[in-house]
Length: 327
Image (tube, rainbow, N blue to C red; front, side, top):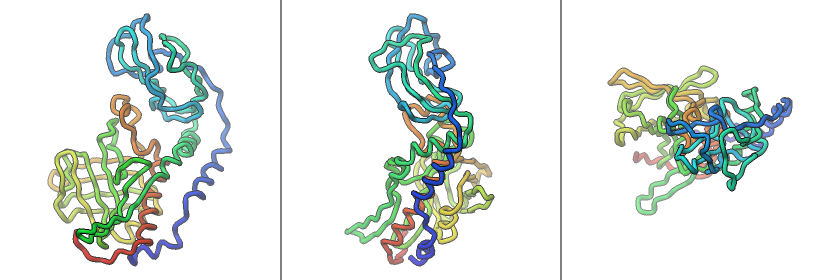
């Protein structure tokens, strides 16, 4: 495709980006560690009942290993009641930092006020996000764009097949002020028989990505991509799809600029919703316990989106699909 030849000199590669971020993090100092005990200030629980002092707990699952970094309100590990049925305790803190070491293990019976873990609190958000990015980089890089060919229909497709080691094609942003991982707006890039388009998937039950609905993508330099759907949407309530043809300008913007948020506007209902990269999913343990977002921080998310776009460009440069519009 002609639009992809213009990217040949602009692809930068991500080893260089990774090195720049690591070099920046060296200028910050470390903070002293502190011991965290099992108190009401160190956990979130699903059952709204008091915990008897005689109750004991076992470690169920570790989410953040010793030596790893965590966001504010992110579940570090979970404990389950052994005696009185007090439910599951999700250990989390209102600040971010690093787990230095665990003072308990799977074989311990744990009581209230017992020492649990040594952590290092990190007040500098930029430092914390850089450390989390370095920690997650290997997983973020496990992003794949594939070339698929149907021998029955001769349909040729280039599409995203994996993001951050998750088998999904949709990059997701999360609903403004929502703490539910299920409130998302996803989008992906597709080339089907030379027809290049951006496809959206929304869980919003009120704004259904119908014909005439509009999306505005806002970037950090205040530039925007404005898309209005010219065709009817598809799917069921709570899982809607629609797409729009894109060209060099849109792909170039997604690749070179940093996305912040997306506003979707219903043409018929005259209402809107806003979805963010800087999400609040970790702030509600009920919704974030069983599922994890594609990325933890806005730094992770912007990197993941850019590598998705870069791999889409490279795949199109490698597999030159002849234009035969069938979508």
